[in-house]
Amino acid sequence: MRDPELTELVAQGLSLWGVSPGNVTIELTETAIMENHSGTLDTLHKLKDMGLKLAMDDFGTGYSSMARMLDLPLDEVKIDMIFVKHMTTKSAHDRIVDSMISLAHRLNLSVVAEGVEDIATYDRLRTLGCDVIQGYLIGKPMPLPELIQTVSNQPLSFLETTSQKSK
Image 1 (cartoon, rainbow, N blue to C red):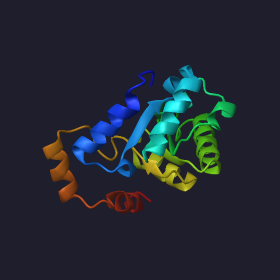
Image 2 (cartoon, one colour):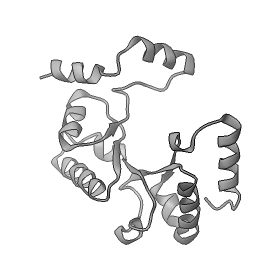
Image 3 (cartoon, rainbow, N blue to C red):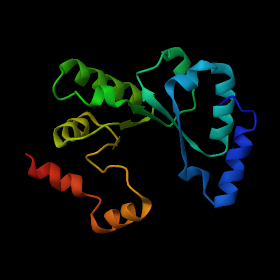
Image 4 (cartoon, one colour):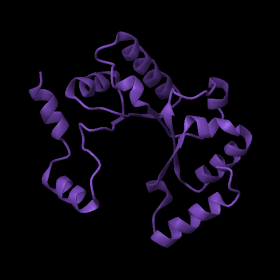
């Protein structure tokens, strides 16, 4: 975020690979966004003006202030797995995740929950209105050929089916 040529490098990459900016989300940690707020803010606005989507990763683990968050041209926040992982066994975690989802939605941001590893957590996040989940429940990191094969052989609605079976 401190590199003055970052936006130009991103533009060159998009051009080189023929990728539409609207199909790219740049994820930045909460700490990275807040470290040099004024400089980062300028860069974020330039990236946003290019048509890129912006996400705050590790939401809730850094030192952001709500006042500073209002200035950020974000599209989504990613709730860190430290909160998600125990939300079905620790009520405080559940309340924090619920509050984060509510706050993000009130700010017109999408919410991604990281670290979803079981159906119970998925069901609870779904009830709370979480927009996207990420974690081992969906899949573990894998080489591209294996990913293509997995996605080709598995319907994208497998969570709906699995979730209904778990009830």
